[in-house]
Length: 510
Image (cartoon, rainbow, N blue to C red; front, side):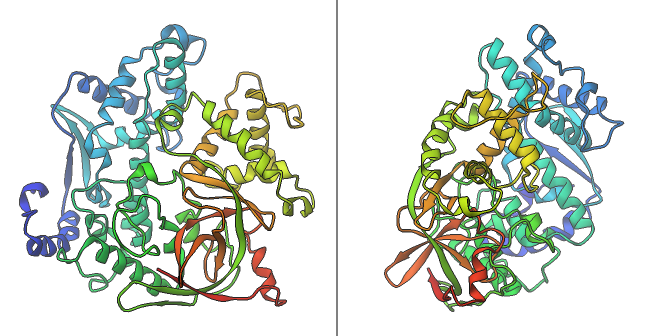
């Protein structure tokens, strides 16, 4: 038996550097992994029993296709009003508050080991945790809506933790088994996980990354956090000759004094957007969802001291009106049933959108359609491109449900009593949290970093899939973060390169 917490001297940098290099081999030899999340508490046994019950009831179905009709604890209205018992769900919510669900947990990604999930004296197979967590995700708003309306307003703000973990567990376990687990994908996937040493956001996952050679990255705990993050960013950019890594950058919330082009993996999740504009699955595909720079290739130089990145591109827009940002705060995020703030922001942003002119020139697209696409970065909750027939209908139904009569609404072929309008609410929340709606002098609208301001520029860098917000500071720029800029995302702006309408320039980013 091996127990990592007591087998490595956490206070000896030399020993840690040597031992961390060997972790992959040790995990690969593991036949059974016991995940212990702590001692029993008042209702932890009930939480574990609920996991086991839901997992067993869903045992015969596909892992990711949950049929809620098979879960006895889940009731539909009007039964839910009279029969809803919050105790199992409260116990689950508290169980999911355990610190293990927030850790960097590379050990669960090894492909051949059996796993048991243990709390106190109760043990549940990991497959039951997987099935139950997907049921919880499907039913979360039903749980919250029923209990908030009829029984006291308890907030189920931890229900997303296990399903996000499980999603990454299966994706990475399969990727490791097939030797396709990528460093950048894992860095992004584990970015919100907690660890005692910020350097472990990088070092702890190296063993499961199959796109690395042994000598590519040196594990050295004598390096500062800024050095580690700068070195890993330089390695990724120069190895891939692409700028995908920049999409993980943001200035707001940075904890280390690394250059703005090096992602700070230690930024607290409260300060991050809920959903990236550049989906990393799409970024690795041959047909990514966005391709702002068309078929161009990146031109990148990085200084020896890892302070300056120089790359080519062009300015396509300048911010003229930044709207109020949406923060990751309790009123909006932890209580998704109450959407008063969302409605007020919608009413603030629409007058800004009315100033835009470019959308009106696009055949077949109204300004209101450009607006709702921008509010969800033109992507669904399932990371697919939005469509007029589905997401557009959800938006119009959402407008009807929220009594917004300023727009011409058409009758929709959607049965009364469904909650499809909530799909748009969820997409809106994920896309806009910690982002700011903006319009530009040139007539574009978009979503960008929450700290962008008047005079900041939206740039397309050669070899990038999405545009970026940059701020000029003396003789260089700082990178604020990635942007969604409507009618720029699919290479529309880069077409001016061919006829000489656009002039390329070098951007020195510090």
